Length: 403
Image 1 (cartoon, rainbow, N blue to C red):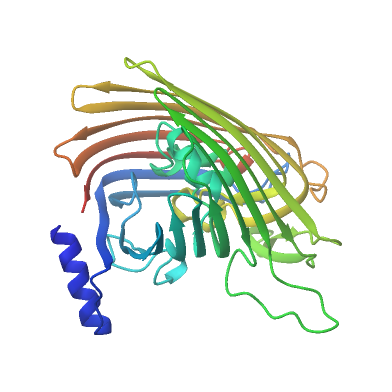
Image 2: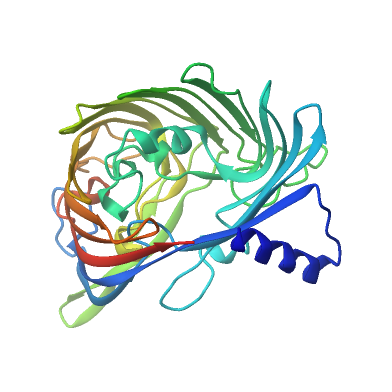
């Protein structure tokens, strides 16, 4: 109640208008702690990696946004009569350690939507928001799509909290546990571009859809996503240096362009069943011709996976097996995920290796109150981003407060 009154007061202060029919709620999450992160390996995929860069990055100290991304937001609704409501949600992500905005510096990078909702026919939202898979698979993943590299999104890139700009999304009401959703993005990242007469459309358009069932101990989710990447030229970048005969030479990496448009597709299916003593989690998925949103493995550019990237010919099978179990006022979380590149991109040079990426994670949360909990996390990934020698480790203790 206090949050609602505060948000309403803020709204009056900002806009000078307040309506009795409109409810506005201020909410947020603060998540921080102490931890250790390390990522090391070679940035080359070639069988012979002579002269390629060996890299090792470590960080000990403050961690933040591990269990849940730090955020604050405003959400509200206005009763329009006959069961119809105007709804909105504005959610801003930020770095607890610096106070800087997240999501590329966007003011409301986590979500910015306006829509209409009805208990009878469902909800229509317009704006920046997560895709259907990211909404429906939170109940399937034991880590609830949180805890950084521990969440299933490390292997299932189409459910790794995929946010799309310029989205129109519709979701049905809940029918005895069933719910269906579908969305279309006119450009997934950035403002929608103008199409000039006689020129190709440069917008990266996407489709997202899914179905979920949640009733009693059983939860099931199914999703399908696709986006189209326009043809691009080849690019060459310097990834390191090598010294030969006292002379330093640059080591370059060439990313092949595409001669034609590439359509990236992914489907995922998962289920969780609560046996009361323990809850079992399973998922399988396939991604073709690219990746959606990958982990950045600590923010190091040498190992950062691309977002909405096309790679014609790449085929990845994804797996997740997990368990969660209540222990007193806490819960143990555990999972194994694997992303298996069964086929390398067509543009891969001869001798390039694409290895199975596997992640092993163990976590624990303990509730101090209804809104505050502490957590511990340990996660180890090998062959990160399918690189033969890349390994990523995360260990941390944290505190999370919701308001």
